[in-house]
Image (cartoon, rainbow, N blue to C red; front, side, top):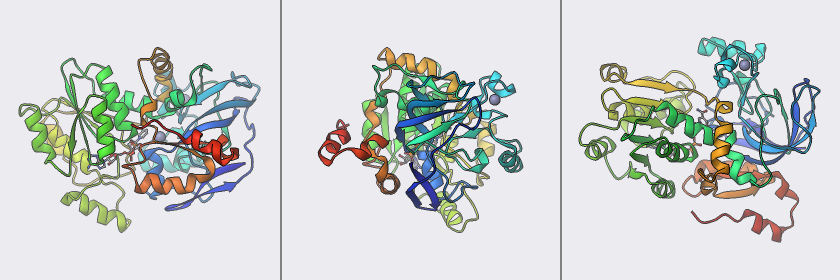
Length: 408
Ligand SMILES: NC(=O)c1ccc[n+]([C@@H]2O[C@H](COP(=O)([O-])OP(=O)(O)OC[C@H]3O[C@@H](n4cnc5c(N)ncnc54)[C@H](O)[C@@H]3O)[C@@H](O)[C@H]2O)c1
Ligand SMILES: [Zn+2]
Ligand SMILES: [Zn+2]
């Protein structure tokens, strides 16, 4: 089969690789119909996540048709399913608490030992995301093996097409979890840094969960435009001094909750960010948490800090005194996707949540390497790329129609 594989920093390729097989009784094999590229894939592409190996298949946002099942899978051939990026056993101490992303059984010992050394405890597993999280092959491929297929995948009804449900695999529950973690109270003002796919879903979710006002911060006009369409007030950090603007917009008090949808690769020319960038280039640091520092300073006293943005290791110049003296609460983590999929699917079915607005590109899997570069270099025009392996066989004329995306 063909799959998008990692070969080093800024080097991914569509290769021919062996088809996946059933290995354990709870496995299923999917024929992938849609798979997306995520902001988290950029951290891999930029080389900031350790333990990637040449040939690893990327992709943790995918859905497809069940084509093979192990003897203990609860799925049936022919079903359409969306698969959470978190691989979880469903019965350990953490899965019992619905902390699926912390599962203690899905990350094999040989890889979890390394993550235990780095993090203090072994991490849960994820698809297509380095050997620290299990080294499982991802779904940017024609076929994928889904372990614990009786726990993760959610069967979707045929009348909902892929574009409507694909994001249940990651960014929709992630935006939702980010807003849940912000402990929003009626009347709250919530500030969201980063208007990529995660930020946009966090904005949408914050309103759904009762925020009175959402202020969205980024620098890409097209992404800010989408945030505005969702009802947010927008700040372009290249045009305004963010801390001053937030004070002004909140009567001097600051936002009640702040959400970091940027992660370890903050952009911008602030002095702390330039220092972080220099360290990252010298390979003596991974984190560039400028946005996180800024949001801790911005947050009101007694407010909440929600961090869905991914970080990999140790950050310096962290405003710890400000966090403590202002009495802020911090919640973070990889999303326990399985906790939310059922409820979010219902909201999609009822027409309460739209996920299609952010798809900017539908493309064949064969073009994935070039699309990674575009997603990295041209974020203003590439909001979210969905790869469709089925488009690879289409004649040229049909491709144009399949690519068609409603203008935002
Ligand atoms: N916790 C989870 O389970 C989970 C799941 C999915 C993604 N993520 C993480 O969420 C983050 C966002 O993902 P995405 O797909 O939206 O990524 P993305 O790269 O598309 O979006 C990030 C956005 O942040 C903006 N940004 C950069 N610097 C900024 C700054 N200083 N101030 C304000 N905005 C700034 C960028 O312009 C960009 O629009 C990533 O770190 C990703 O790894 C976490
Ligand atoms: Zn993702
Ligand atoms: Zn578990």
